[in-house]
Length: 369
Ligand code: NAD
Image (cartoon, rainbow, N blue to C red):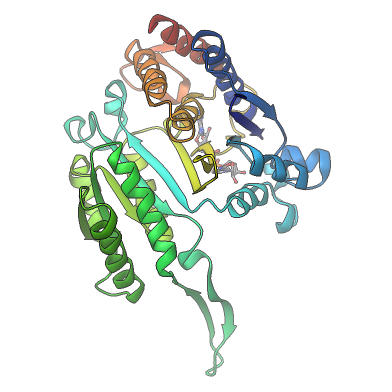
């Protein structure tokens, strides 16, 4: 059997720096765990524009559709700010999401004990937190028609966006959340605004129907999204998996992310429908951007990108034990007090560079054998 394939798109700014550390970890799995990947690397974002005049070539897009998983660093930078909208670096990322039809966006909010004091909430509220927000990514108000700014009959300008969901769009993201819950705490909370929005009523009814017909063994609750925001700040540990639409998911996943502290720690996955081999189309990427203010200085925290690869192990390659191993290695390095600049709080720690952090994770992986 051939090895699973992984397309790596480091992108711009700190993207290539953090991806270098992930490459070390991928190599470690090949050498030490007999878990080899066929890795290819290509350009995306500003780097692709500089070489090809487009943020994503058709050839790279075709490779992404072929690969078992895509791992992306970050795109963008001030030198591309004046480019035409159609060739901006972000268009490369949006094209990948659209053509791979990645409708389910997974954003974990996990609080490592060693970093609990980074949260703006009290230690006991966030310590040990491990929740997952599943956001619908390809429909809803960001895509619905009609949209635009026009002049109405009274001669006044008005802006319009349309929240629209079909049943099948809700069904597939609900299934994705229930499947995930079965591998975790077996609990899903669905969030919408069924009290004021018809699309919310359809959302609630449809999620309930998918539950009753296919996932009756998973615990399901419903919450209005505004109340959900409050509960996330009050007692986030009540949740396991939260499933919600594109707009509310955008907001709630950022709220949940900040429960845990630094942007340099946050991974994400965007999943599509399963292919013939059972693997979903999948793109893994850190939540942070290209951080031009620290690019090229060895200051970037590679952990968000490393944890994105851990998600790939778990959700694309069915290697949950190895994903646990990698997450435990990250936890150990943090518990040992190693800190890139973004993690340096008042309690101090041992300052390390991007590559020293990657090497420390490798050492912790070695120690786990
Ligand atoms: P950013 O996430 O790049 O940076 C925000 C702040 O967090 C900066 O001070 C940065 O130094 C710090 N930071 C981010 N990641 C870090 C890491 N791994 N380690 C240490 N510190 C880290 O957001 P921004 O400054 O708003 O955007 C910069 C560029 O990135 C823009 O061009 C933007 O469009 C782009 N961007 C890309 C993505 C993506 O590729 N998915 C996401 C967000 C922003």
